[in-house]
Length: 151
Image (tube, rainbow, N blue to C red; front, side, top):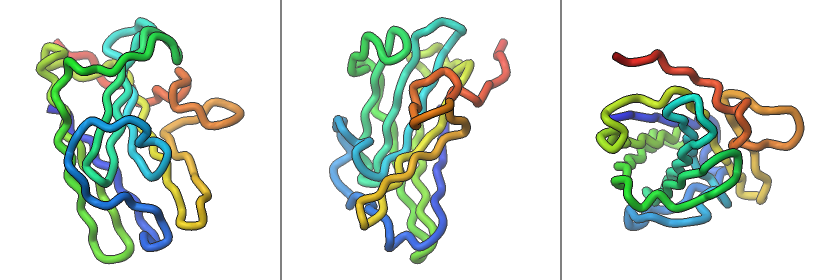
């Protein structure tokens, strides 16, 4: 299993936090507060995108290369998503992803990111790294987390 934990601190009441819903595959989660992971399994151009909503909805997509060949990854098991709210100043979203379809191996590189929507409609885009210009979580520069090779 791969455990990803996203934590937002501050005045959570000022954010759009989707209400709990059925944990199911849902497109368009990135249009409001959402947490994302992008992963490559090797040095090739293909990658996986995972979206996790505080509503416990999720989406998984495969890409053949940078923003090309997008397909829903319907063959992958649904992640488990847990939401922890601690008072009015902390929101945590934890996603557990089954690595069995990847032979139990961790990704080679990952990009971790978030879209945070404020109640006034403004959005901020957070990532471990950003390329120059407008935010683009798909850009290779965003795959900044390199995981050690496994035996």
